[in-house]
Length: 381
Ligand SMILES: Cc1cc2nc3c(=O)[nH]c(=O)nc-3n(C[C@H](O)[C@H](O)[C@H](O)COP(=O)(O)OP(=O)(O)OC[C@H]3O[C@@H](n4cnc5c(N)ncnc54)[C@H](O)[C@@H]3O)c2cc1C
Image 1: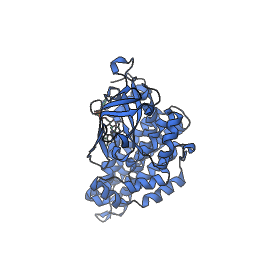
Image 2: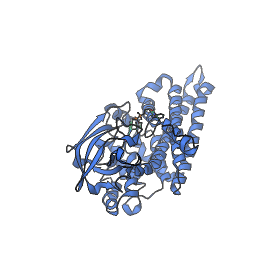
Image 3: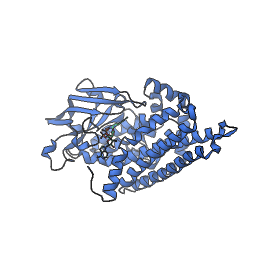
Image 4: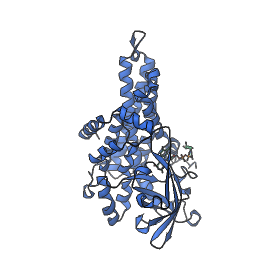
């Protein structure tokens, strides 16, 4: 789980992208192209792609170490983390031809698979009520509908799309009749696909996308028609563990900043860190971060052993998002007024890390998962 060499080399790469770089992007709401290119060229975004397809073939814990380090160094992996894990759906459910077509080019970065079109404005968390419909017509599907919060769509060549292929009322179960597609957005843009950026409180490059008779070749269907929801679920544990690792990294960044400042800042003739009122929130956030880190490791171990890890992945995601928020709170409070100054980067990281209590799954839904699937309580929704 340590992956010390990987961490050290990611640290070196991140040193080339200091706070000033991220601040300027944040103000312009611009995409960190240079940073993403550097991560791609170093092979980090292809960490999970097997070697036979040109990737590094590393275990999930190595990918977690990469993303954790990116965040702990003050950078932001949200611009490209999905390139690491969305391809898992092609790897697990694609045909040999689809794997050959896409994976080697995703590994080199020639193709960016960064966009994941699941959430819709009306369905929200209730994924199986999504309305985007893909109708089979001969050798292609015609897609109509809308997605929201499709992050990085403007900076991706491909999108993994979840759409209905059988109306819900014609299926036995609500989870049936959904299918996954690889959409080539370069071909579709202006031909039935429209992308509109959403300005958010942090620089996240999220968008809403509209499908108006967008044509997708039938060969771009991933796996069997109607089983797409299952395929998306299969990828969620890896995503949750990796996002949790990012939150652990954020928490480490906040804790390091807060401790350094608490040691050096003198008020009333002594370091503010001598006051328990300043020490305790930092110490508590540290304990929360360590617990979350252990849960990330436990989840990765099970994932790598091919065991069910839904419990650990969900708990890691929730605990880590709460730890990073607690650490952010402690950090901003420790810095007093300076915590609000842009040049300290704290307010930026504080805005960035807040997301993970909502996306990719909200804390309430993690709690519902634990209640229902781990504790055997009745389903609440
Ligand atoms: C910046 C950003 C980037 C994102 N990127 C992507 C992306 O790339 N691709 C993608 O598909 N989606 C993406 N999302 C969407 C994200 O996954 C959803 O926002 C999230 O799953 C919550 O869905 P919702 O916003 O529709 O909230 P809703 O489902 O409307 O829920 C609102 C609130 O109600 C609570 N709630 C709802 N139902 C229940 C229940 N049964 N019990 C208890 N509480 C409940 C939720 O916890 C939440 O707090 C992104 C979101 C954001 C903000």
